[in-house]
Length: 227
Image 1 (cartoon, rainbow, N blue to C red):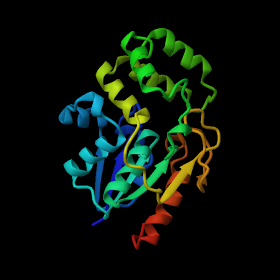
Image 2: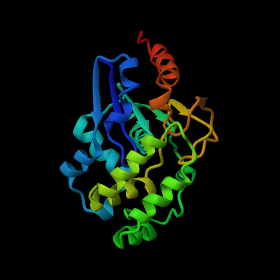
Image 3: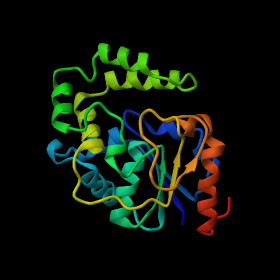
């Protein structure tokens, strides 16, 4: 039985897949909400990284080689790590397998923790600065909504997400089965490996769902799954 598992990105929720998911066939669909997952897991935050999260998700949802995990941004990073642990298929949309591809002012998780603790990361000043610097008109409203979400999410959950993004991980990610990326992406640099290029920006799956769906459908067809 084909199961498609969707994993969203940083400060997103499963609705990021609302335009894409109806275009893809599946006998079973699971859209993970990471805020709910972290609440159930309730880990010691200092042990959180992408590997420990992948281990928790694999065990909780019995993810296996028969599943296809589709991740956007941070969700793709998680998908590649799930593949390393379970053998599942991994589809990365606007994502990475090298943490250096993430565009951020620092990759030092301790610095990020300090800035979060003193309130900089969720401050109105930082939100205004980020919104002012955002270069893409097409996704500007969506980006503004996500920045608003970032300022209102629980601080602990923000820190847990940042650890998934930035904390060192002992298990290297597996090579994904498919990478989909738009060149104008100011959040994740395009891969050095081969990828399918789409129009749009970091949020190509929202504004160009048909174009993003096409290579996923081809992958599924190659697995013997008709659209």
